[in-house]
Image (cartoon, rainbow, N blue to C red; front, side, top):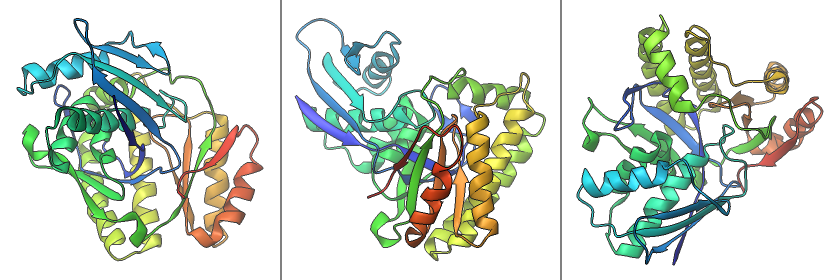
Length: 312
């Protein structure tokens, strides 16, 4: 058995919506940072029986999502993968907006590569992980990760590291506002937005400009510029969700209260900003020297279940 470890990530520039659901090709490029305090451990080995055997958190996976992904690698991409035994668990809740599928598929790709001696480079690992979950493409490596490409070709879309995390280590914490599964899977919410939101195409154009802005902000270590681009990418994603039919929403009252609290800190001159993905959990990003005041303010918000430091 090979054990692989990967971390989820949070998108500072979103990609809400896909142009190809089968190949999971995003509608826009995205930029993420790692959540290094959150970890997925995946063990993978050869299975002596017929078919794959997959368990998540010690329970047999009935969704078939991983076995379907493995079959895609075998039949559509020609990889010689024998039946596998897979065990995966994380130190954070799954299906609640914390990108458990990102770290799960990234770890699984790495485990399979090591087990079978495929010697895949990071770009190839990223492309294969993307077929399981688009955000998984950004979890094959730590750092400021960019997922971009041209057109709808599978080979074009993979993640690359824009900057090592150690070169600009920001403070990051995850604010847990719920531990229940989200009502609408991310992929379904994205499909609804792409097909029904009247502002979807405008969002794509605007978000591409914000992506360029954020990349330049990271390259110049410009926190204020990165915060501005990230917040507007989040607001744009929310606008697509709210204008969809039916409307899609993942935030709850505690999420909204945390967002307000962090925005208040920013108004008072504390360099901090917030973002959320498809779930009620809020991620707060700040300059490390302000961690104590940021955490103290968030922990006072009613409805907050836990505040977890996401970067060592």
